[in-house]
Image 1: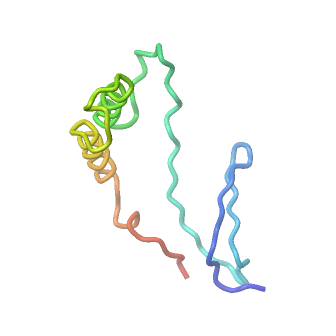
Image 2 (image 1 turned 90 degrees about the vertical axis):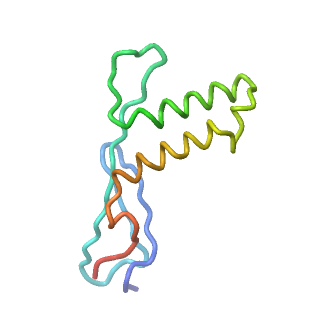
Length: 108
């Protein structure tokens, strides 16, 4: 059983990642992955750590969530605050995307 891989799964194995391909290739293949390491979660009292990500999406999401918890009309999906967050998030992601992020393929 072999051939071109069609499916894959990635799992954590302690400090490393393992990838499983199906069906198992019958010859060597080159697979390119683009991964990121997220910033450690901040505590609720941490006011000194600098964010390693753009702060506008974080700020707009926090404002949206605060209004959502308060029961405010601005805290509903589709509200101007929610659209503001989606716009800030989309712009932050778009700034870091490369043409390769828009495609999914296996090098052969």
